[in-house]
Length: 530
Image (cartoon, rainbow, N blue to C red; front, side, top):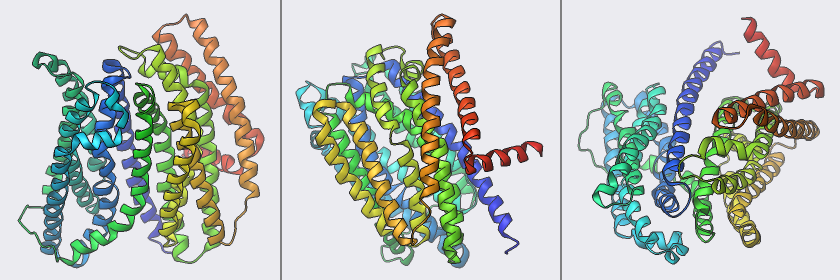
């Protein structure tokens, strides 16, 4: 065994822990930002318009920024850093920055001029509400340059990650949320004095937040040795390699963006406020999904990559099955908690200011249907790195387009009777289709794996989670009534119900003898003794 392996593992674990802390801070600030929106605007005309306006440049964000560009740039930049010398490395960085600025700058200009047409295409039914298309187009124009700022921030993040600096670039999105909150609220309060609709102030807040996300990384980038020079060279080998590496990722991610477009298009045809309710619900759903899914994905990738590299497929299967079992352990009870406590959770977080009890009910309905897909979301995040470790990017891309087709089918079947809830339901169902497709392909690729332990664990965890869900619903109602109502009693009742629910769930798993749970508890006990 390579003696350096533990050191590598320790470094990866430390980096992952640092990133997790920064990501958690960003997610919390993101939730605070949504609370501000809920209090100031509730759900309806203004926030519906903002959701669509923000979503338009955001559709391109993964293609040009944090997804495809980041991974491709880091791969080539790392090679240059180790093999090509200082001068050629920084020349490549400058070439990428200039080309990206020209390309994304052209897209931003096009978006600015064609904003009303893009809004009409994405939210056709907004035309039925006087002034809604105009307001959305105005905010789209304000927020489109955010795409350029976030793309440049992704390059800065790539440079810093290559240099072994993870905390500041991961924390940069917190600066975005902080800027969007502070400047957004300030400009929202000032907007009426200038005859501008208040929600427009939040659009300017997003743009300023994007600028802060970029600026927060620049001092550290300069400290690493970067200096700007004009170095435009479209024939540069490194630049071409980055675009070649980006292409498969762009194709794969485009399916996700198409799904977002479909969901926005159909949600815009539902009653006013539907886009707002879905957005608030998805933000809450995204918190456990992001934390569990991303954490398990980060933990799985290095392990399966190591086993794939030495062709130890038996160990790879074991690692994959353990990850999937862990996903079951954490996501199914979390989903049950969201289903049974959706109403009090949303009331506690959002029901202030202009966010009414009606909005709470409608958002809770959406959250329940989103929660059903929590395990599938996490499982897909675990499966995709396994395909990457096996040098197969084709199957995950096909899976993404299968998901789009399933989403479109489920929405059309359920939209009329369910309205905005249909969007949340179809999102969950289509993700389950993707999970089953990737699972079947992986089963075939690995020559089969043990399904009986997974099914056994699924049944045990589902039963324990259902008991826990029913218990927390009863505990919350009892505590809330005993404590006499009000915000403080809401908080204490919800906190008490969740704490008791976690304890009950752990007790049930102990008696159900799930191997992964026993292993997890024994490791925690060992750490506690240290």
